[in-house]
Structures are given as structure tokens and as C-alpha cells.
Image (cartoon, rainbow, N blue to C red; front, side):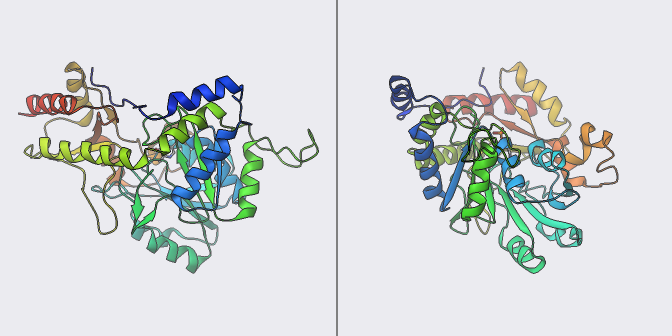
Length: 368
Ligand SMILES: Cc1ncc(COP(=O)(O)O)c(C=O)c1O
């Protein structure tokens, strides 16, 4: 089986993990937490970082930290993971959805301004699959309408927008360290900001809003702490970030070469005016004249023992939200089409050139 993701640990991961076990520092109190936070904030170019238990937890913390209130509106893409929308909804905030481009998979920035109302308080930028969103026009809108910006860089470790690291934009940003990410801690996330006050609040929400007087609480948070063991792996991983990005780009470019002759496939864009793809995943869409849907092709690939994943199911179509009466009139056809036509193929860091050849041979056989 060529699995859709295969993480690689060939740095100091074991050494640092052993240090946790040998010293007994296994909880969130251990020294690797601060080290991982410092490493990430200096890598990304942010002043402060709060390590936490997942990317979804990081979004919860970021939304809460910004002080958004019930019935406020936040503009965000429909084509993303549920973590973005559910965090807002659980906190009583209304997501206002916009569509995404068929080729970059990223939110259509030109669609944002018409959705701004007096209730709009923030824009959530979410970078999808490997290319950065065009951030500058969003920052301009935020300035014009006095809006906050949350940047979801969960998939963007090592990506840059016009030479500046993704995860460094807006009021607050987040990363995920799930095993399919360029840097993993098994499970994990991080909230970053340049604002000391926001940072203090984020730290509070991560840790049940403990105050200096133990067990006296002025506010409600979560136990979203990261363990020292997770952070130890993270420190070892970030030491290798440049090599990791290089390997992911090697995977992306190799597939581009291997699959370029299949005319009914749209392959990922290599670069835009402001960034070069880091191929978080190798995302393919089927052209309209392909006789298969993405789902059918994925079933066929599984018979060749090739792992795949579908694209995100858009937020405006999610049964859970529709049952709440949300997004029922939203018409966002590109995202519907992306779900129908899109899937991604194995692109984990442990993938070999032979694996890629096997994947490409199977795709050629099915589509020839
Ligand atoms: C864009 C985006 N945001 C948030 C998350 C949530 O991260 P996690 O799985 O660590 O909760 C993901 C996960 O893949 C993601 O792709």
C-alpha cells in the first residue's frame, strides 16, 4: 500500500523524546514547550507563540482571544476544514462564506468586500493545499473597514507570501502539527501574534484561564495544552524545515513530470505571482471531459493499493450546519465542483521515487 501520508523522523526526534522520559518532563510544564514556541515564532517572524493540542484548538483560542462577540460576522472560505467554521459557530459568531478559485483552491479575495456589513468584525484567511492566498488586498480591506485578521496557516509551514513567511500576517495566526503537515508533533497546534496582550489571553484560554491565585477563575478556557513530548518532536522537526520543504517540492515537481501527459488532469500550479507551491498535499482535479468523478477514480486507485483523500466538503453543504438553518441559500459553485472533481494522492515525506512511479503508473493505467 502506498499510503496517502507517511511521516518521516530522521532528525533528533528520538534523542529529544528520550530526554523527556529520562528527566520525567512529560507534561506541558517541560522545557521543550518554550523552546518549540521560540523556534516557531522566530522562524515565522512573530513575537509570541502559544503551543496547544491541535490546529482546531488553535483556531478556538485565536477566535476567543480576538474578543469577537455573539452575532458578529467573520468572512471565510467555504472550501476548508470544518475546524474554521465550527469554532466560530460554537462561539456564537456567524461565518459568512465565500467561494474559492478552481486552480489555486484559495478564497476569491475579490468576493470579500461585497460581503462586508456593519456586523463584520474579522476575515479568516485560510491557505489551502500549498499556495498562499493573495494577502495584501485582504490587509487593505481590513484597514479600510477596521476588521481583524485571523490567518489559518495550518497547512503552510515554510510557505511565504511575497517573501514573508505565512503565519506572520494579521492580528493572530495558527498552525497545525498533525502528521500530514510539513512539521508534525503527532497532534498539535500553535497560535502566534505580535501583540503581547493577545498572547497573554491566548495562554490563558489554552490553560483553563487559571489566574495567579490557583483555582480561582475569572473566565472560561479549555485544557488545550501541548505535552513536552510533542514539543520535543516539534523542535527536532523544525530543525529540518528547509530540507522538508525541499523534499515536498521534489515530490510535487516529480509528480508534475510523471503526470503531465494525462490531459484530463489539472495538476497543481507550480508558482503564482507571490509564492511557489510547497505541495502540502499533491492535489489534482479532473477536467470536465473525464468520464470518472473523483470518488470513482479514488475507488479504482484503492484497487491498485494507492491511498487517496477527497477534497474538503464545502461548509455551505455540511449537514450539521444546514440542520442549524445555516448557509441554506449559499451558492458557491466552484467549491462544489472542487469537491466533485478533486482528490489528492500520496505525498508524505517518506514517499520514495519508486512510490511515485507506482502511483503514476496506476493513474496512467486507469485513465488510458
Ligand atoms: C486549513 C486547516 N485548518 C485547520 C486544521 C485543523 O488542524 P488539526 O487537524 O490539527 O486540528 C487543518 C487540518 O488539516 C487544516 O487543513
